[in-house]
Amino acid sequence: METQPVLVETRGRVGVITLNRPQQLNALNDALMDALGAALLAFDGDEAIGAIVITGSAKAFAAGADIAAMVDWTYMDVFQSDFITRNWETIRRVRKPVIAAVAGFAMGGGCELALACDIVIAADTAKFALPEIKLAMLPGAGGTQRLPRAIGKAKAMDMCLSARTLNAEEADRYGLVSRVVPAQALLDETLALATTIASYSLPALMAIKESVNRAHEGSLTEGIGFERRQLHARFASADAHEGMRAFMDKRKPVFTHG
Ligand code: CO8
Image (cartoon, rainbow, N blue to C red):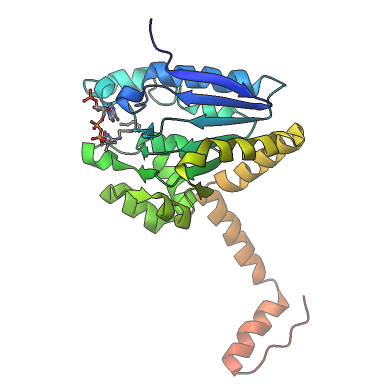
């Protein structure tokens, strides 16, 4: 009998999805990503579910996109089939909170999958890396965009350009994960958190998720443009002129709040 690439169960109002290719360290192939997307959408559409957990095995959350599947693909194969976009981005359509419970390897696409979740709980055994550069590839499932937003440009460049692996403590310190728990408590702690979240008002949860994502997803170009208008507007302010003039005069500014 063929093994299911993901296992699905419910715990109260929490939907749990377990990535299930342990022999391949949960390498993410099309069958798995299709099944993951279908499970996510099913839980999202189920009014008895308030939060979703994605987890893997003790050894690997996921060791990345399936290199064995990709090895012979051509540019036309991936362009015409819309590789990644066609089935990896289903997670972006999910309106309920999604929590990644990560133990062991979260490499490449596995790290990118965790980054696409709303909350990441890491076991103290978790290891995070975007090692695609070793394959002369790039973190092309959102990694180059989400990692800098999560941990800042300097650390993201370090990880993406050097393939450096972060342990759980570093990932926590950098802000890549929400919290670290002992490996043996990973599922219990994650389920407790998910149960708490799922006990709250679902429309409020969805509104908060959408709002936080709006803050998180605004483009740098939009942000800089907004900032520049705000800067220009300061030149219409008497206080700004007073502040600069006072600096030049080596005196304390007197603000009129205009
Ligand atoms: N794809 C396919 N098979 C894999 C993968 C993978 N990513 N990772 C591990 N496996 C397989 C191994 O081939 C091995 O299979 P077998 O038993 O048949 O030889 C089995 O899983 C166990 O792996 P190892 O024996 O290597 O286990 P170790 O404990 O020695 O090492 C590691 C664990 C360090 C995680 C190691 O397996 C490894 O380095 N894996 C590859 C990590 C990696 O490079 N990930 C990035 C992949 S590329 C990617 O994710 C890109 C996503 C972005 C979009 C796509 C653009 C390319």
